[in-house]
Length: 125
Image (cartoon, rainbow, N blue to C red):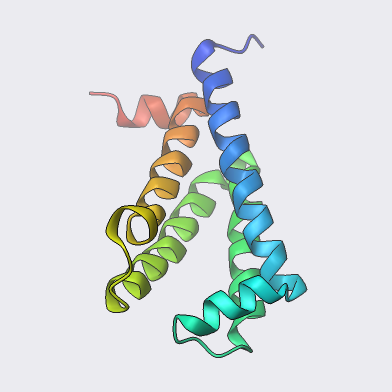
């Protein structure tokens, strides 16, 4: 099977997104001080940090595998929605904090769209 330019673009965009999400989730699972402090400053309990990390890790792993990538993207989008809502409630800076979840979501779905011919066929007019 030959890989198209669309697919290579999708692999690169998805790869960067996956690396970021894995780093974020594993820092939370490992209990990195910066993750705990940041999450607590947004009003969450310190005990919730690891749970959030496991949820994001599971969604990211689903996103990696082609057969479950759409489910993973949906779950990542839901997770990012919670992040956006949290930043709206705390009146965080708009472009750097509040909309960051939107940026990651666009990369998540854009990478999946590019790497999945089936998704492109489904969404094409």
